[in-house]
Image (cartoon, rainbow, N blue to C red):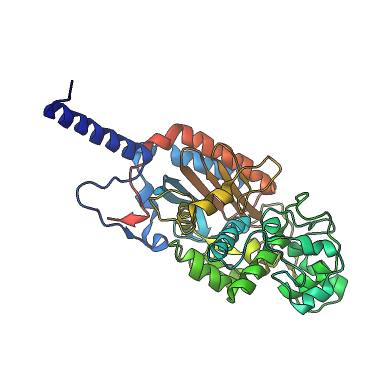
Length: 429
């Protein structure tokens, strides 16, 4: 027996209602009637703390502040996104002396920068300018400059691929010190009076034997991501920063990202002040000057990290960046679904993902970043919710703080996920 016209109308009404419920549950704004024009906003200039104040989240601030007190954090920026909709963005504590943290403040994100660099590589691959299985070193490699070829003593270098660098499987080892955080010792050992350039560091590394055959093992390597930064420069014909800004960050709507400086005097107007834990002793300045400095301001050569850890940005823009590489459609992606799938593919617990620290078969993705004055965590959950946290203070836990920040996320999600305002602060309407 057929369905009457009234029955069809009733079913249609039920379908519309169901779609509305799904839209509300997803936290994104559903278009009704004519297409609603979405206009991207400049997040760092538009968002304020007051925009995320709501009685529905009573007790939320107290939990974050208690966490800051527990770990001695001077300031924190926190953003929450669900299904490409920015639901929450707020600063806690101090950005600088007498300056409260706001969502638009930018902070060092340390190794979260590696996720940005990995996306740059995927963009180049999609343009047909390189492939992940392409060799990096030797006469047939991307970095085939005569200076580098002459420096190679271990022919295993000829086996290193772009993907090996992305997955920390190139054969580099931190035994004897991480070259990206051992500038002073490198200068002393080589009797150099000036800070080594990235080219000098590359030659120095190529003269050393690899710790293992490329592709057969993994050892987390900051140097590997410096090499990827140099690959981007060689293939694109642009500086690393210019390429990333023009081809990756600006297309994603992230206009406030910058490569950071070494000292407080180098900071951008909207950048925070960094702090170390109370018991952290002054460090020898990275340039072997003999001066003692706060570890977060001159203890390491941040400017030399490039794609391994040099970016600064706000948490709302970092959430927007994740939205542009997550395979969801609310925010247009800057890479294809095939690239998203490749970056988040799970192999086993001992294989790094491309740019991400870890991606689980459940759909949970993690990226962490830590050095003096900074602790950052990006956690993308299987339900499409993404939490982004950056502090301007380091703790004695170092990278281990991410575990506790994850626990904070889980506790807040359990209590408040259903209470966030249903909106998308990435856009105005």
